[in-house]
Length: 350
Image (tube, rainbow, N blue to C red; front, side, top):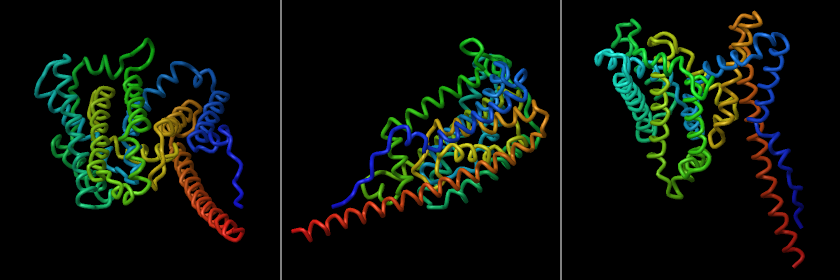
């Protein structure tokens, strides 16, 4: 007769979720800075600034979450973001004018450029069977190099005024920064697609076991191409939003973007081994470096310590994920052994 473990309560399961644990860490960080510099840190204006600074990374994080859940990686998003912004800026400069007509052409060009790089990544990963790390490392250099060739290494600073006033520094729903509002839309849509649609279920299935997904009839190659295309397209969106926020391209200013986004996604509970992850966890993971950087500046600590803190949290997050996977594997083996012993006891009784 096999013995079953007692059912785990809902509260216990929630506490064990890494995204919830990281949320507690984020709350603790916020409380510390609020105690140290409450008059300057814990204000509505400062929280708006933090949300605005995290908005572009949040959009990139949606695409990266999908990619990492499939057990892939996209190192090229920072360079694709720069390249897309350059293409969008070039189109708007060629068109001329400061109105929405010019802006929409630039937006379309930027998204199309990002989507094209995403399709290249997806085809090389899915069809050519080149490891994602190598593919996206190669396109990282290619996209950035082409952006520098197109601009001759000089940033483009001619951005339509409507983009700066309405998107870069505009507000939505009162005092909510427009960038944060746009990011929220992408986060909600990304969360719905990932958690409530067949596309999301297939994403988890491929990340959990690609070969098993193929055997049950999933079109794995087509799905992987779509996932990398989503990541590239969102990098194109981020490129045009960066252009609107800073009124210039950032050819030399996104060298750490890919690593920051990957770190945030993994810190939020998305497993580098694939098959596990949530958009909510990604959001929490993104706000940790944003709050740290903001708090360090206000308190007077060198912001370089942010990289040290985020790096430490990243290592701990990956270690916790490894422990969780090992425990799950041991639990699976234990359940199999229990069932086998139960069958043996039944046979002996008969």
